[in-house]
Amino acid sequence: MPDVDDTVERWLSEYGAPDANLATLLCDRHEPDAVAFRFVDADLAGSTMTYGELADRSRRLATALADRGVQRSDRVAVLLSKRPELVVTLLALWRLGAVHVPLFTAFAEGAIRLRVESAGVRLVVTEPEQRAKLAALDGVDVLETGAGFDRLVSDSAPLTASETVGGDGAFLQLYTSGTTGKPKGVVVPVRALAAFHSYLHHGLDVRAEDVYWNAADPGWAYGLYYGIVAPMVGGRANLLFRGAFTPESTAAVMQRFGVTNFAGAPTMYRAMSKAAAGPIPLRRASSAGEPLTPDVVAWGESTFGVPIGDHYGQTELGMVIGNHWHDDVVRPIRAGSMGHPLPGFVAGVVDGQIAVDASASPLFWFGGYQDAPEKTAERFTEAGRWYLTGDTGRVDEDGYFFFTARDDDVILASGYRIGPFDVESVLITHPAVTDVAVVGRPDPEGIRGEIVEAFVVTGAPPEARDGLARELQDLVRDTYSRHAYPRAVHFVDALPKTPSGKIQRFLLRRG
Image 1 (tube, one colour):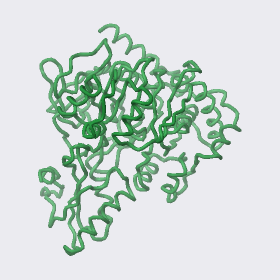
Image 2 (cartoon, one colour):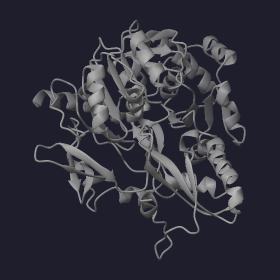
Image 3 (cartoon, helix red, strand yellow):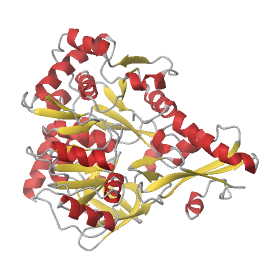
Image 4 (cartoon, one colour):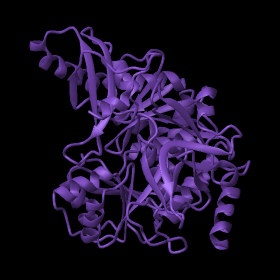
């Protein structure tokens, strides 16, 4: 595939250059009248923002943020829903050379504090609906959207020149959960734009004539990488829907706005299939987060008129394997397979784990977890050649990859990766809990992939345990995150542990 390889090399040369300027690459080089984003409210009222409008508003906000003390390399967290102020704020930060730390709007105070403190955030940009979650943060400046924010933008002069941080400069800092310990910081360099562009172009096949909708939340990697950053670098428009997900609302948005290229989590497809949504003609349909089951694949083809392409990636990598859609790389979909490596990546299976050959993958950009060299070392083989994903799988004789299982205890629920330690750390604070373990088990409704379940050791009498279970669910929902609360709480006499005291969660998953 010489043309494909040439394209990858061109992107890498451009986005990895020492003079790579993020504001230019994401906005200023595009036609001012071209649509950058389509915003859709819960009532299906829609509006658009052009690249010219985005450029002007972000330049003005950049001046205001600079006056507030934001400088190059500063970490700034953004806790906003999918609204115009979100993309304006992100581009304004990048004009200053600052680094965006995403916060999911379903996070409660605990998850927010952990990320803000770990990243050394100096400013949080938020909205009135989320402001109360920041009340307990000490020494952190807060900027809230609303009339004052709008005046701040309109009254500020446009920034005349944007910072150039180069291909190795950081522009994002996300957090990924593991089996033990706090979430780990993943710093994303500007040269990762080459990998994001490759997935937008080769993997999703987003074309200029498409109405593209990546429905993932930009508080997480898939929504941020491919719902905000990749469309901007490719000069494409993404649709951002502010309403809550339901099968009915998703179908209504697709139909009202004529969506032709859709990307979402398997949870969305499963819920739509059970609600018998459709028919909804699409040109492309893609899924990421966890494997699709054969029944959903069959439903998708009959409903959308095209197969749903299963794609695989991680926060540390972006998307690296998939049933890619572009004519230059498309291959027949094989049942149960997540496809082939994305152009720019070489993948394999090492000791049963899906792995990426870092030495042979020009688009590989992960440089290690922030301030965690021991965790970084766990991700690589001894010689540093292979990055180990922690997911087990296999590859057949034709190069098709198949996901088998996780190699750790991370929970895949509704497309989100949830670290059991994070939830356990909240539950153990309840005075009635003496020991606890959290696992993911198959969702009995077949919607979410897995659900979070907690196994609790307590001295509370049996008659008090129903109330205690509700208290524990509320504790996680209200102080950590709505998406991570245990949907089932089991009370046990003791937890299975190794002689060294480590919890054997695999025994709890078996039931």
